[in-house]
Amino acid sequence: MNDAFQPDVLAEETHAGRAWSLIILLALIGPLVGVALAPTTAGRWAVALVGVLAIGTFAMSWGGFQYRFLRHGVEIRMLGFRLRSIPKQSIVSYSIEPWAFMRGYGIRGLGNTRAYVWCNKVVHIRLSNGDVFLGHNDPERIIRDLDMVMGVVTRG
Image 1: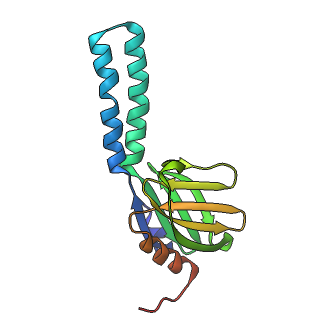
Image 2 (image 1 turned 60 degrees about the vertical axis):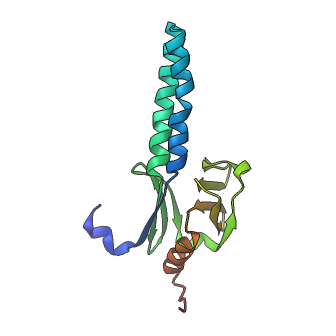
Image 3 (image 1 turned 90 degrees about the horizontal axis):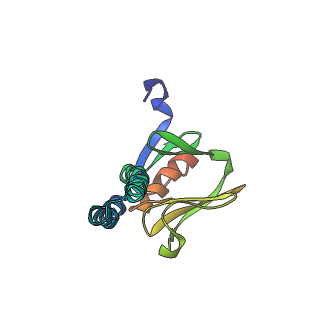
């Protein structure tokens, strides 16, 4: 990270799905055993394709989502790539909410709604043009970081 931009960074948080990473690796055992018991060229190609996808998914869930809280807004990153920037001016409100398993994990959403989730609690950020859900094992930290971005004075 460039030191010239450090004064703009108020806080950084990471939300990883390490348990999901291990489940992904365990899910590869079945196809590997199948190809070992009945080796075919098609089976090997299928396992290779599934393996490449699983390794990518493993890396994304293990590394997690990185949230950067800046003076001018919030950045959401994964594997070093910026997925989304949220300008401070577009944030209307935010609150902690439960996240149902049925809604899924990872990157979710359609249209103007996006979720970055590996757990069952999120911070729902209402924007002037949609909604963003940030998953985190300690959502109170996300609220505190958003308060810093928005200039909210908390009393402790």
